[in-house]
Image 1 (cartoon, rainbow, N blue to C red):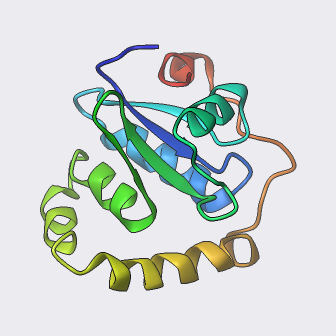
Image 2 (cartoon, one colour):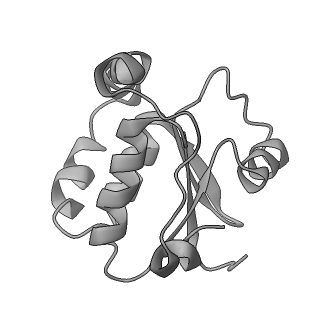
Length: 134
């Protein structure tokens, strides 16, 4: 695993989450991120190492190795700060209180399967994207 890359853990069966990962990959101009499904062996190991309970956080987690990890709205906005076209708005939204941001985030997360559907299995990356998945 590359120690200088930020890791995005995502719900591999969620259509919204998979679309968000594709969105991030297209805008990650500086190749900052690597990706793993929460359900994968790597995802489960990273969660366990950080004692993250997926009953409380089950949609997106950003890990900055040897620095910190972020969950919910903070994870989404920290990711956005590194993506072309989202840097400014993400930085501004981080000024809002986390408790307020997470009310909106939790509402969307709780309804994501109903609104966007889910897959029977995790996404399988194409050959040219495999290097971005751990």
